[in-house]
Image (tube, rainbow, N blue to C red; front, side, top):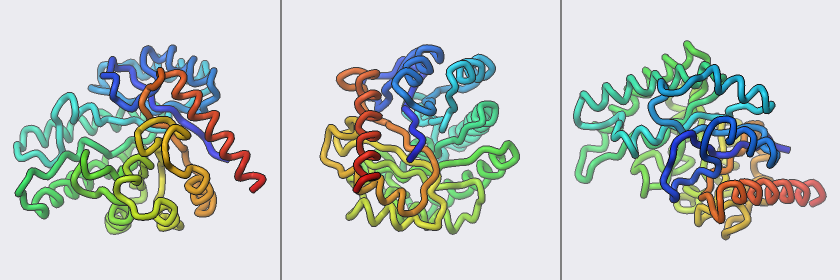
Length: 277
């Protein structure tokens, strides 16, 4: 019913980062293919350090695609934010975003707009920071459109990013932006915190710009190891005619490969139940 991706990283990340497959591009692709995934999501830092030609050759060898590039490490490791009070930091963040767009373009992948949008400081004038973000996003959308890159604005829970947290407000913002390469990215882990009803939030996206989906449990484990109703959410995605990737972004527990396998096995079982439901 759907195409599935798995969160992966070429970086040596800390154990609590929700990425299952970590290592060389060959190791990641070999593992994803063996388990049965259609694509990988790459979490990267400083994209100029990587050889896009090698990545492209390896993807072709294993018959995989890249469903999205995630650049949140630029914020969590590098401190780059699009709304920082220091204009030098903001400019550096914009330049790094352009590098990520070039990287995504070379690999025919979408790019997530997530943690790099930064947090509004306590007591800060929300309008000032929101205007900074909107202005930056206008430029990013323009640069990405010239390079045929789709952007996925992620609705992220308030404990990680403190604006554009909910599905409805994020979708309404995207609708207001009127950019044909800007889409909403929803994440079930964040939705478990922000939404009153997860199914209704997905249904709100019908006939709107929903472009990308992360599946993980309320406890950030793989689907099936928590309390969320993935049958209901998968059915809702079918109801609105969603055709994009569902990517598993979960903690690498009990280990990376096993979390990836259990997640895909569970989602395939959910699909089977829905087909006879």
